[in-house]
Amino acid sequence: MRYPPSLTRRRLLVGTTTSALAAFLAVRMRSSAPAIPSDKRTPWEPIQFDRASPPVPVVEHVVKSADGTPIAVQEYGQPRGTAPTLVMLHGYPNSHAVWFPILPWLVDEFHVLTYDMRGVGNSGKPDDVDSYVLDRLDEDFSAVVDNFAPDERVHYIGHDFGGVIGWDLLTKPELASRIASFTTFGAPSFDMFGAWFRRHVAFADQPFGLLDILNQMIRIPEFWGFAAKPVVAATWARIPRSTSIFDQAVRWLHKMSNEPREANHPNDDGYHAGLAYTANFSDRVMNPRYTSLPAGTPPVQTLEGVYDRFFSNEFQASMDSFGIPIERRLYNAGHWGIATTANDQIANLIRSWVRINSDS
Image (tube, rainbow, N blue to C red; front, side, top):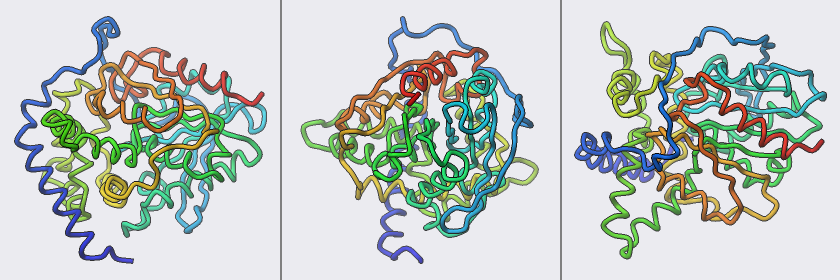
């Protein structure tokens, strides 16, 4: 089903207007330091990691989601039914490989499942935007747990867009009942961002509210840049004798994050996964599906990198107004600390949270 012309025009207007404002302030804003107290930071140098193969044994599967889209699933660690199950979903623009560096600290204790979001890796790559709405992405999670953890409540761990999906799972009772705990890497939902956005455009919060909004929109250009499908296609077009426009932008943005990002990500994957922003961001910000989470929501922790230059503290704070207790914990790394950190600090944060909230 095609989007109504009015919705397409609205998305184009939001994208072009915000991008113009972002471009005006980008040079100044990208050099600003993260608002984390200095006593919470210690020297940190990000490292490269090998994306070619996992460092632990893996069994690969493919399952069909409700709409027939194949979803590539990777299984590690302890046998099913003998240990708590972790379901780990990557963000954008990544694949399940982003979890490789922390797997060695998890597989001795847990049954671990990762999977490639539709549009990425060996998962299916639908071409229509409607196939990437959050309802479809939630169904992918259901397909994974129904096949590989059918009789248990799993511990969901979402990085970046994987965290966005996790929040949506918590709003649906039939899916929230499958989750024992939720860990998000500093990523609020788009609906949360919508509520935060409206508070910050209120007259009483000016002019600083608009500055906070622009600060966050510059940090994650996918929000405004991918409002329309043609923008996603143009972003991932290949430059002769080079990589995609997105890769070129990433190289420049490294100056902001000082952290390896998954550059040279396949153009086809980047394009298709990018449609998840087209399908959801402006719609959820303008028409949020929820403004609070119910009592009985599974326990939530948010892990926030003290060097994360992509999620502002103001943006992360939007999680605090949704009516449930949230355990906020810091780790000494950047946005991709799960892939670029040489110690087990993040794995320990995951492991301790799962132990506390395991049924057994």
